[in-house]
Image (cartoon, rainbow, N blue to C red; front, side, top):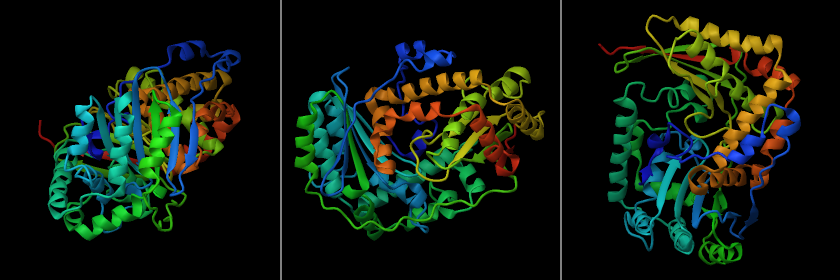
Length: 468
């Protein structure tokens, strides 16, 4: 089944994933730090760049006779034009409207008639497209992806049609939904100050209407060039043969002059922010909290990944236990790093650690915030023991293996593509465990002090307006 569009992917980083953990690896991981280090998981990675700048990652896996082909373009909604909010997402839809050799919707039919599935999505820092097909159809998929990278069939009819589709998506998923856009769309707009991180990336309806053919053509020529993309092949294939096909179909696509990178930096937040949003369709109050993250790939970034496991991930997490099990304020607590639109690895700019919950009307919002403060203060005052750190590492390791094994190789392709785009190093996928293991109890405490302080926090409250 084809799932197109940002709004259909917001609830999970997995894009309708079928997750499976590596049982053997997880079973060997215990809270005993001596045994946690005994099992290593190695993803095969072959990485090279074509003369036109296209980054290519090959990762064979002969477990099943399927292949995943993923093309990631280094353009997300974060850096779309200022007077064209939602344009990156609109353009994602345009990529299915036809190319030189494939008419409108024929790309989709090509995949489905060959027994495959496909998808596309728009995220903070990339737009991605992928197909999962029987292994013997690899060449066909490489040809098809190259065909639309060469050029789209950009017509006024196609543009008008997709403007209507995206506007309807906004109405269905945000404007006419209780808690629509909460908190995945709302919170960045409240917590951030830089327009690039803080605008309505789903798109204002007037901006979507204002897009014209010249905008679309310019956007395609600028951002959908091979030197702004990564191609990843994962699955049951011969690397030598795949290289030949990649060279044959992609090497002649011309590169483009890329614009200078925009400044995405956020000022240091020194005062807590609180906002309330009325929701005419909601019948219960909701609360979201967000803290600005440490810079990606720093020691504190990895420490925050483990703090996320301790505080927010799973039913053993501090916040689930305190808010659900002990006090019964809510039935669940959700969130994470880059929550709702990916994972802690597949972004490339300022980010939030965020959590949210819907709660009973007789519960005061300050009671929830006090619990949050208390749980963070316990970790700060008592410290994070090595035993707690080891348990967080087990959870992180399990989560990472889930990510790598998602959807017949797509999870692996996602990490490889983003590490190629953002770090020029897809082999980082094999270095993540080592980076997390460098985190010490002392670093955890310092990270709490620097980043989980109330003055680094934004609170967003939903005021329900629906009549029950």
